[in-house]
Length: 197
Image 1 (cartoon, helix red, strand yellow):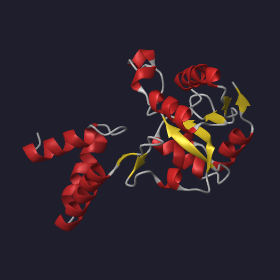
Image 2 (cartoon, rainbow, N blue to C red):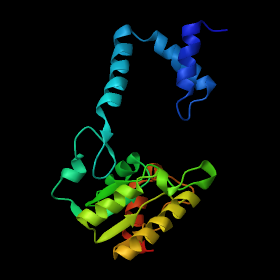
Image 3 (cartoon, rainbow, N blue to C red):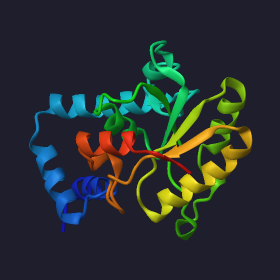
Image 4 (cartoon, rainbow, N blue to C red):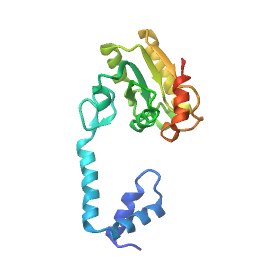
């Protein structure tokens, strides 16, 4: 039905999250209409991101610096750690301009149905960080889903014996909602209304 290079391009686009076969077809045909220079620039940007982005050794977020800009900022409160599921959740929290602490990215949430357990997340790194650097408070800002709640409770259980105050952002975020889609006002209210768990 398609020439082999087009079929392969469609197949690759269809591997992206949220892209179905029809969207993949549209993207493939759009790319074929672009000038060669734009395709080369797009390809170089993909490769550069893949080659230059790594995990911050402190917070586990994605960065091109070691440590990342937030962890390296002496004006941030390094004794206040906000735990999020994904690096893009940091962007959502930063948009509030209300939080001056640092972050820790778990890279997912506990989900037995999907085969994701605590050992698959960056929890060991969080524990090492707290043992070495200490923390006055850890804010659990995982999503308001069953998996996010389970993850928050698990982390709270791990940290309670260490004498660290563990709080949970208030439920201004709708159940089943993701932080990246929440507006700044909702996140600000959720952050200010957090409760100890």
